[in-house]
Image (cartoon, rainbow, N blue to C red; front, top):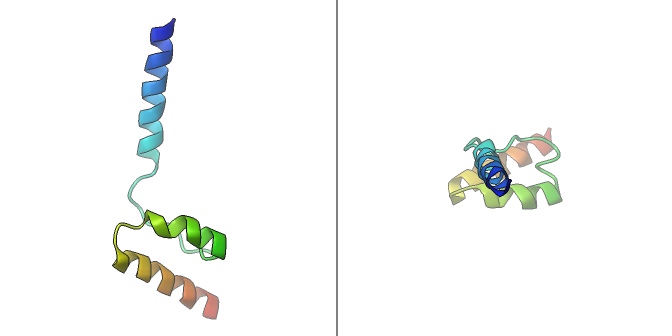
Length: 63
């Protein structure tokens, strides 16, 4: 019985880690809000991608 749980946990862990993908976060009002921005910005690998996201959010709010 324990081996079933171990296999289940391994499969579930693999599925959850593969769900994220490498795509950039969507530019929308939720992700560009204060709390959304705090959650999204740490997901970027480099400063250029982070700054591009911030610039797009600012452009969206100016419209």
